[in-house]
Length: 352
Image 1 (cartoon, rainbow, N blue to C red):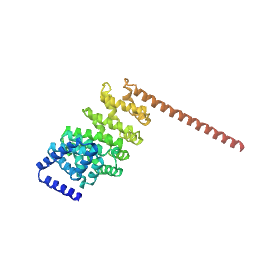
Image 2 (cartoon, rainbow, N blue to C red; image 1 turned 135 degrees about the vertical axis):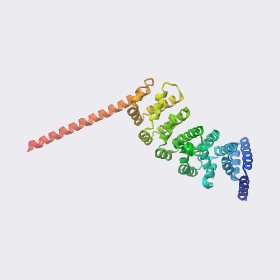
Image 3 (cartoon, rainbow, N blue to C red; image 1 turned 30 degrees about the horizontal axis):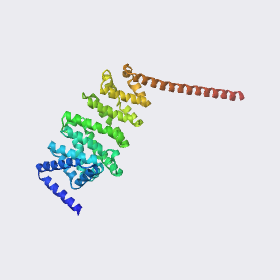
Image 4 (cartoon, helix red, strand yellow; image 1 turned 30 degrees about the vertical axis):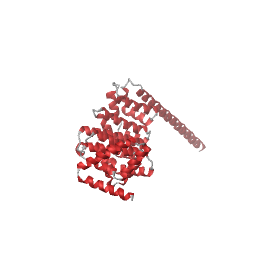
């Protein structure tokens, strides 16, 4: 039967690969050429052809290739996996879910965190985003299972790049660690925008925004920009839970400090921060406006070149005067009630 043939082919390929690394390199190189040649096929034909290849061991070969110490073999494996996932994410998810010990998926996560090649880290980050994109879900049940597996077993490993001893723990160097952090923050931003409550509770439980905002202190501007994008994604949801969490953990302090350093420069950092403040004002997010005025009023009042902060003070003042008016009204009502009671009391006395 065809399933027996498929199993035999898979077994033979695994036997070959178990022999030595040269065999692995030759096989992965050949498979990569075949997958590259399929670009000439029409989309649906290419999808079916790759699905057939996956039935006879393509994903297992990619798994072995990603574990190789040879960078070229890992690059080929990453390219083949990207082709499979971008054409048919649900087929890839089904394999990754069912594979023993989730070996290939585990390797993808490990390589994003600690591969020595910047290109491979970037490619695998794209693959992970595609796999976890709810918009690309054909089978909702499979996708939900896959997302649950990721949050239960793999997300902790991804955010291990923020551990204080990450350099030693991940046996990497500073440049590679910074690249990994940047990719992980990009992914976290995507999760915040697309994964609802699962990422919300993970962010709050692990103070992810606080850890990410530490990147604003780095000299590398691209890391600070990534941090601002994550904060912007959290604010963009207009969710009071996020607001309260960020206020409690003082998450906006590094952003305000970064603004005061860059306010006189016309650069991307300054633009990104001002866009965040502009969004808060346009959406009239009162909780945040009050927080900025109360907590950072002194710093923001010194930025006279940007009118938006003057507007923050005006909005906050009008809110305060509204509450003062309400308070006066309440006091007047209470006073008149007291008077009524007094006169009622007097009438009772007269009756005596």
